[in-house]
Length: 304
Length: 304
Image 1 (cartoon, each protein chain N blue to C red):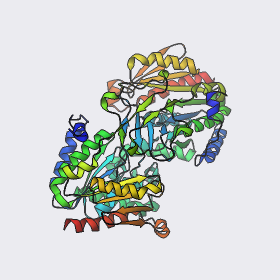
Image 2: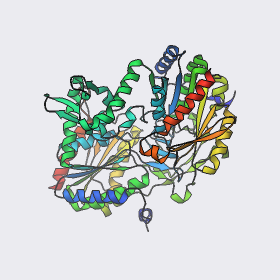
Image 3: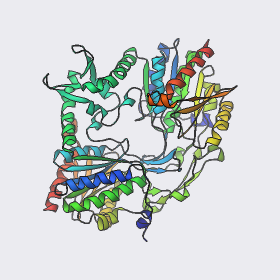
Image 4: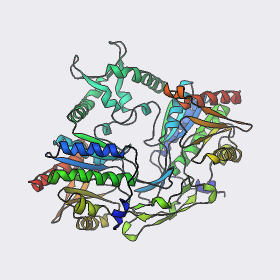
């Protein structure tokens, strides 16, 4: 049995797991002759205790995934948004902290009514309209995960569902997935006690899922994965290596500190940059709108 | 030099650090003859790399701290809310994900206006009114941290400011602070690479801050700290030990799985439970309202 088969040999017991599989299955059934995308977004956690107080996390607010979901929806795609619990979500991502409460005021002309202040309508209205439309049409399905294990199980199940959509399915794997984990049988049950001294934590490599993903689960789909590095000198080499190893259609390479203005699109025969000019940055254009434009063109050609 | 003095011997360079200290200083100056509380809330992170992609985190949504802040504000306290970035905040904590967008609708009677749906006004209005009042009076100061190091520096600076308030200051230390960390000089600069095999992570014990907190920084203040355990058999013993070790006024003990309905208040001479009855739970009463009622009574007696 290979590494990844071993990982999937024990059925999990996440709350809501069966229900979420039903939701994904009927969503893919409804949209199987439609352009459809699975977006993964946010970081995964590695619990350090069975009763989890501490965990190792991967940095990711979910900006890339949640913005990209909006642009795919705008282009008519149906979207399964598989995201880390509490990470950014399409539409609601535009508002944080006290933004909403600050936008509201009591309407003194109407007893007890609450309205949005006139100066906030311009920014809020387009988001509200797009959100209501996606919701009304049922073109956005939200599924949440927290741990690496939940992520991997949902990813596999989503692939099984999407496989019925053939080439019309795009996988946009923007989640920041841990390379390491601690197997269940090595986890302590209770919170690690500090009076026993500082512990050492031995991590294990996560079974590589990205190769079986293509060959076993969604052989026909248009698979796009992301490679995040902090060291520029490694980026292109590692992105090309990932493309060859996993047989995906495209790897999007990006550096932690410039990821909001610059990515490298790596395909089998060439690679090119997508950048935001200073002007585009000033006018509030997001790099995800350009990435999605580019990928949709490639996806359409691929699916012909 | 002791452990904690060594930790504070190098000045940090967090963005906004100086500005936040100014804000805390003038806040404490304004409210120095007033009941004032420092609430810490949310978990701390331990970076595993200098260019941080991965980190160890402590579980904490910030529910306890953010709810308690509301009740302290309601009782007239001025509140410094020192919280983990993106954790729950007073008032906004009542709404998540798409709650706000779902509450809104275009007002067709007024061209382009947006209003809150009538069925949502009942829940939203009291929160909005309390929020606007706290904001208008300037009685709530929000300071955010992410890493353990930021937390410790802000905690110390906040204590220096609060020390001018003497016995009128309450410290309500509800943040979930890591017991372990990795010193700066042992951190790799770049993202740990998985092709070099799975790493082992050696943690160090965090210098204990809770004892110097009382004796050096805020000797007069009313200090309340929290003890979270997952193992019931350890809870009372560890809470009592913490109280004796740190010379705080009160330790609030709680178990991970029952923390929303049951805490143990441990003082120097006795301990007692605060619980929510099933009826109270059904009617939406939060245990923080009872904890804060209890602590305010004790604080007032203490400060007389």
